[in-house]
Structure formats: C-alpha cells, structure tokens
Amino acid sequence: MQIRYVDLGSKVPLGLLNQLAERASAYGYGAVALQGLEGVRTVGGLILIPKHSTDSKDLSSQRSGGISLKVLTANKPGELRLSNRVLRALDVVELDFRAFSEGAARKALSKLVNTGKPVMINFSEVLDAILSGVDLSGLYALLSLYERGSLTLVLGSGARELREVHHPIVYYSFLQELGLSEAKALSTLTANPLSVLRGAGFNVTL
Image (cartoon, rainbow, N blue to C red):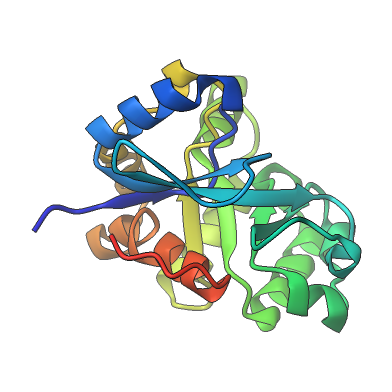
C-alpha cells in the first residue's frame, strides 16, 4: 500500500497551484492545505484543503466562507494564552520554535501541551534556523514532548516557492537525524496531519 503524505504548512502562492499539485502528487502527497483557497478542490488526484491562518487570539470571531482548517500562528510565548473560545475554534497551532527556548517559553509550551491541541512546525523554518546558527533548544523540547507522547506534532513543508517543496523522505530522514524514532517521524507526515484534517471536519480518505 502506497504511503500518502499530508502537508498542512505549504505557503506556495495560489498562482502556482497547478505546478504545486503536479509536484506534490509526484512526491506521494495525498493532501495539501493552502491559505486563500476557496473550498476543497481536487487537482490531479491531490486534495487541496482551504486553510485560514491568523495571529489573532480570537479565532472564533473569524468568519470564512465554508469549512477551513483553522490555524493559530504563535511567534512568541504570550500568544499561547488561549481562551476556551479560541480553543474551540482552533484546529492546530503553527509554532515558531525559535521563540521557545528559555524558562518562560518552556512554561508556555507546558500550557500548550495541557490544551491537547496539535502543534505544527515547518521544515523551511527549521532549515533557516540551522543555517543561521539559531538556538534549537525550543525545537528539541518539542520533539522530546512528542516522542514521549505528550503532544501531537505535525511537520509541514513551510514551502514558500516550488523549489522548497521536497520529497517527504527528506523530512522523514531529517527528523530521525534530530532524534525522533522512525514511527514518530513518519506519523508527523502522515497519520498526524490526517488526524488534524479529520478533526477539523474534513472527510479525507487517502
């Protein structure tokens, strides 16, 4: 049975939709979530999911046409003070791990774990951090929590252009290099993002 991957972190512009669908399908993706997409679409066998990302703490006040994946982008610890109303509207937290390396930030991560909400990090940001020599302790803290079963982790591509869309084996191998087990690394690209989509109300079968 062919493994079908899911990318919830793509930032490729909609103007490149057909090229993205062609490349993603060739790489074994079954679904990709995209900002600005109007409704679920299927292009060349690839399921395209509409995504709504915001840095606002009140996602529940957002009104989008039809169902979409609700993503809170958290770039600093204070943005993880989530009200019950936001938690009910939220599907996944897209986390900038680079801001979560010190004591206060670790406490924010603990609070996030207690919410039970899935967490997404993006490969493009991990790569940028490594090439820039940025402290990776926040990333390792997340990976450790995930390996212990304390949270659900999703790895998105974070691709901002087509050349940043890589074969999932690249991400899978990279996560193992960072210390994740084979099963956990694979789940970040398959079972976990699929679970997020189904939890958001998308009846996706890959």
